[in-house]
Length: 210
Image 1 (cartoon, helix red, strand yellow):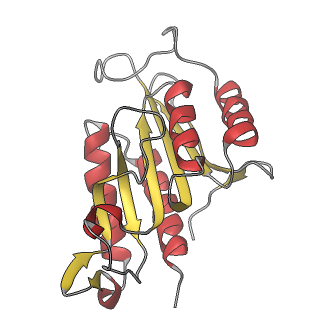
Image 2 (cartoon, one colour):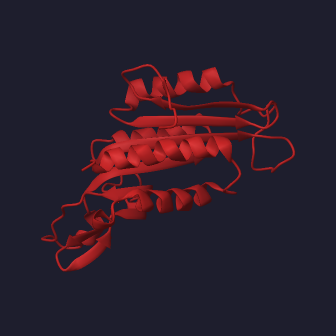
């Protein structure tokens, strides 16, 4: 039986490969969340999609699940996609608010490197309560498709090699065991980059279809 985190990572890789082929399936990042949620739940074996905690049935994949700790903020933030551990206890008050997390996936669509760094820091925080943290950083470049896309002349836009180097630097400095995925589609030049899998200890790995 596959471990939960392996199912999550396989789904991420397939999702990134699909993004390179069809980058406009979703208008916003929230659309990506919804599509990934559906694909991940579909990839889970039927007998693992629901976990039993006390006398309650709970879906193993959760959207906008609360972080375990405020991490210096005024209130607890929420994870984009959280995957629960399949064994839980309900012996504490408000236990549903503090379930154990196997994995968390944070997304960024056309977001700055600062956004990715914040996600990495939150996932690697000692009070995150997350066993396996993943960041998925996706970019679309265009001129006439949508104003939501970046264009080459945009001040925030950097060449792929610069972004790759910055992600690796963040992972080495503050990333802990967080794994980052990066993919880019440029409708202006017709080029595609990635998906690249990166962590703090090894060189970027080009993801290929299984």
